[in-house]
Image (cartoon, rainbow, N blue to C red; front, side, top):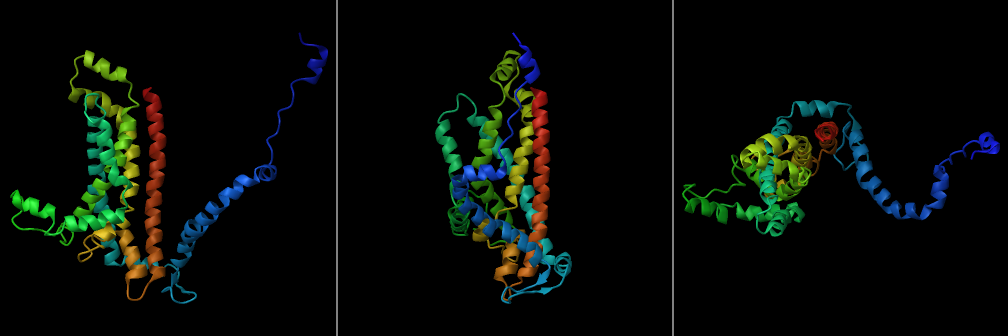
Amino acid sequence: MTTSVDRVAGPAPARRPPGVLRRLRKDWWIYLFLLPTVLGYGAYTVYPLVASWWFALLDWPGFADQGTFVGIENFERLVADDLFWNSFRNSLVFLVCAVPLRVGLALVLALLLNRRNTPFKGFLRTLYFLPVVTTGAIIGVAFTLLLDAGGPISLALVESGLLDSPVNFVADTGTSLFSGAAVWVWKWLGITMIYWLAALQTIPQEVHEAAMIDGAGPGREFVHITLPLLIPFLVIITLIDTVGALNVFDLLYTLTAGGPAFSSEVIEIFIFRTAFGATVPQLGYASAAAVLFGLITMGIAVAQALGVRWARRATGAMR
């Protein structure tokens, strides 16, 4: 029963959330533990990122206390630099060759490991995932030996008749970049497989059972049921792998060092060589290349965010 006092008083006013300063005073110890991470991130990520934009406007070899301001001259040099466009083209070739191969092979493995009657599924998942947790530099050094003319891969191809003579895959201008792409796919195949397995497990089992009752074979079920439901995830996984394909410095540098004759030099190796590998370092010029590379990566990240938003809407519409 509502009394006249209740009607006059009305509902109790909502409590205002505590202010920022009050929360800081109350939970100061939490922020104290976060302080080393914040300082390290600011010193080694945020500051170099911001500083590179300023360095891109300087003619600075890195030895002097300060460089000479040249405006957009470094960017104009980049536009006319054949080696920069060669590295840009190599990055695109690497991306176009490696990303579809990684996404496709990982999907095939995920489909096989998602089947109920596949034996040793846990062991195979671990086996495919092991290269992911191995350092890229170590894999690059190991495959330098494996892909050598006297290595087991070249000798096995000669013995099988696929090659007439041994080939050093990482020292040949026609195969070095593609060899790097193949090693990169092998290293990161496991993580993409995990993405696909997670996507496959979002499809209700009742859908597969209904397809079997209707007489659909494995091929028709995949084409008409599984694949349409996986398209939103395909967009997300492809964009994630695309960003990864632009960050291959450690693996490709230890494998080919951008050679021979710049045939496998991607943008990251071009930046490193210009900044630290040249006889006279050109940190300002390398920073300009890094800024352009960052803008390209940023554009892909924006596309990834839009793709994730579209995928969520598409997935919600299918349910």
